[in-house]
Structure formats: C-alpha cells, structure tokens
Amino acid sequence: MARPCPAAPALLLASLAPLLHASLAGHHVPMLLWSTRRSQWNPDTAVHEGKVVSEQELTALLQPLLTQNSRNLVLFLQDRLSIDDFTYFSESYGNKNPFQNVQEILQSSPSSLVLPAVDCKATKHLLNVLQESGNWKLTNVTNLNVSQLEVNESNPNLLVVQLPPLASDLKEISTLEEIAENDKIIGRVTMDLQERGIHFSVIYTAVRPSRISRRTDVVAELRRQLMAAEEEESSSYPPLNVTIGNDTCILFYASNFSLKANNSVLIDLTNATFLAQNVDISASECSDSNTTLSLKYTRPVNGISSLEIRFLMTNKFYEVSARRWSTLDSVEIVQDGDKLAKFIVSGISAPAEYSFHCQLVGTSNLYPARLDRDPSNEAKNWDVFISNLQIQGFNIINNQFSYASDCTGFFTPGIWMGLVTSIILLWILTYGIHMIMQLTTNNRFDDPKGPALSVPQTE
Image (tube, rainbow, N blue to C red; front, side, top):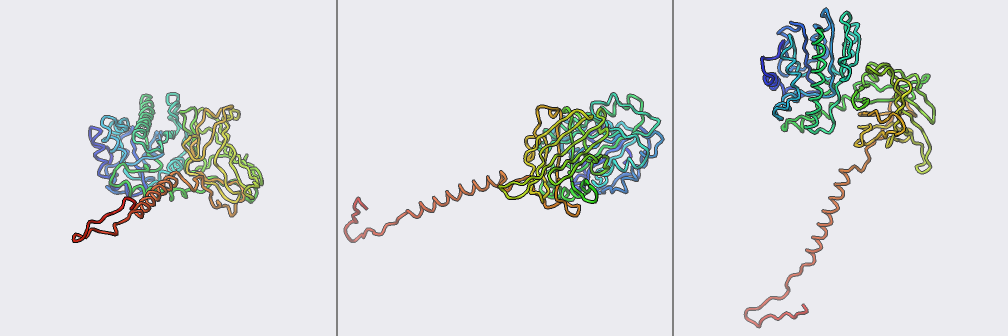
C-alpha cells in the first residue's frame, strides 16, 4: 500500500488486524517505512494478506529509498516487535496508545508503506545491506544527542537508532510503557529532522518477533513456534573466534550483546561483533592457564571514541574434583582508554574440556550468571546484557565449541517444588492407608431369637 488508510489512527490498526493471524504463522516481523518525498512506492506495491517478504523482495522494495537524489535514511531498530502489538496494546488499554507518534507520522507522510510480515533473516542483515548499497556516512544516534546531530545533506547519511530493548519479564504494563518510550524517541528524532527542513526516509522494524502472542487462542501454539525459531536463530551466524598462529584459542557467541551507559545510552554490540565484525581482537591473549578475550570498538556511539571489553578466564586444577576447571573471573570495560569498569563474575565455570553456556548473563540480580560491580571503579555507570552466551577459552578442537556446561543447575526451583509437593502428597497417602488398615469390623452379631449380645467394656 502506498499510503495508509485515511484519517484516524484506529483505521490504520483496522487495516493491520486482518493480517494478524497470517503473520503469527512464521518467524517474521513488521516493517514500517515512510518518507518526506512523494510517490516513493507505487500502488501495486501493496502486500497481500499472508505474504511474507523475503530478503530479495525487501531489497527491491527499498530501492526507492536508496536511489533518491538526497539520501538521508533513518533506521529505527527494536529488539522485538510483532504485528499484533499494534492492535493489542492500542485496543486493550483504552487511551494509552503506545504507537501514537508512529501512527500520526505515517498518516501525515507524503508516502509510506506498511509491510506486516518481513522475514527475520532479512531484518537481521538489514544494516549490512544498507551499508553495502552505497557510500553512506554511518551515524549511531542516541536519544540524548538528537538536537546536536549534524546532518550534511551533500552526502548520503545513514542514521541508526538502536531503540532500548523491551523487558524480558513479559509484564504487559511494563512492555506498554517501554514501547511508548521508544515511540517518543521516534517522534523526537523525526520532528527534529523535519524542523530543520531535511528530506529523509525512515525504516522502523525489529530483529525478532515478540516472544508471546497476546492472543489467548494462539498463545501455546506461538510459544512453541518461537522457541523453535530461537533455536534456529542461534545458528544464524558463526561465533567470534580468536586464532593464534593456526590454532583457535577462544570462541565467543551471544545472540544479544548490549551495554547501557549511565542508565540511558544503549550500546548494542551484537552486529559489530558477530555480523559486521567491526571489532579489533588483536589484543587478546591465550595460554594454557590464562586467557583474555579483548574486544575493541571505535566510536560505538557518539560521545565514546573507543570502547574495550575484556573477558578474563583462568584454567586451574582443583584437588577436590581431581580435574581442571576453566572460570570466567572478571569482565572489564575500558572507555576512551582510561576509564576502567570492573565486574566480578559469579557462576561462570565449566570443566576445562567444556564450553560454558548461559541463557542470561549480566548485571541484573535476576540473571543466573551475574556480573557484580566493583565499587572502587566506574562499574556503577554501566549495565551489561548478554543473551545466549557461549564462551570457551581452552582446549578447542576443530574450531568448534565443545560440549556446553549450562549455568542452570539440575535442581531448579520448579524441580524442588515438585519434589516437596510429591513428598507431602505421599505422606498424606501413607497416613490415610495406615488409618484405613486400623479399622476393625464386628465379628459377633445379635440373634433376634436368643438372648441379647453382651459386649464387655474391655472389648
């Protein structure tokens, strides 16, 4: 569709609603595009219900944005978003419409396009595709430096806005508020560029769909689909490897690798580390007893000229277990070469022959593998978020991860609850059977033709 339907925001939601069930069937996300220039897309560009846009088709649809005379492109990238988010949050919470700015901008834009379902493989590599399509000046924008943003219209500019990730606790109210905050960022960046008279185009999309459908009739089905999709996603790109000579001595992988500075500036290093590989690992060190993975980034965001992240691992023999164990002892963040933030790691160890894997690693107290801040340095200014971490610094064979030792113990809280409940029920059953076995029945009865039965008190 070349323009969203007429007037009110509710009509846009109504146009998206018929595509809801079709969009739930696969591993894909919505994509919204709009431009300050007219006639960017023909009416024939409309996407039919149930159509999933592939990577090749998306490249063709983006051609008008890449070939226009004044190329200023803004990419708003969210960690997860589904087409049902637009309808559910807008309809379920009355006047609290978290997509208000996006809907108003779509309606007022001279040309726009809504793609309800785009293959996640296409959005995952979208930034690389855009960078390869022309000689862009890449700028990472934070929500704090919008007014100071410098845009030279004589050169093509690619502005990448990594929106803050949504909470993983799946509480609807908190998710609603976080989506609304992201919507405000989109409105603020767009309004600032419009006030300067700059012509630009916008892409708003996500890396993966929302984890759980808010539609109760498809919750179980979609949960199974997303779990399978996450397993497929985990192998979408190879791990980062550090090679000394001809031998690989460190393997590092994460599906999400992000930092937050001063509680406000989000730095998503996933693409730079694993996809674009705009990271310097030359300072990494390997030995039989100590290994350091050094990741150096140049200008990851405006305001930070350099950023180095070090993972310090040791390999020691422990007499109690009579074997060697590899341990991630600490993580260090060095900003601009002198500001050191150190985190003491708890809960990350594995037999030396194994790799280590954990679903969630970071500074949050809720994570099974935690990074504890050292109060004597800059650690209080940083938050770390790592999803699906797998790391190995010793005994790597054939450039592949060894068997993974997971951070989740065998006796999880759910298992303990099941065991305690089973023991209580078993005790009740045993007591009931014992009481039933103590019951006795009469062995003598009255004879109506004879004398009355006399039962002594002792019996």
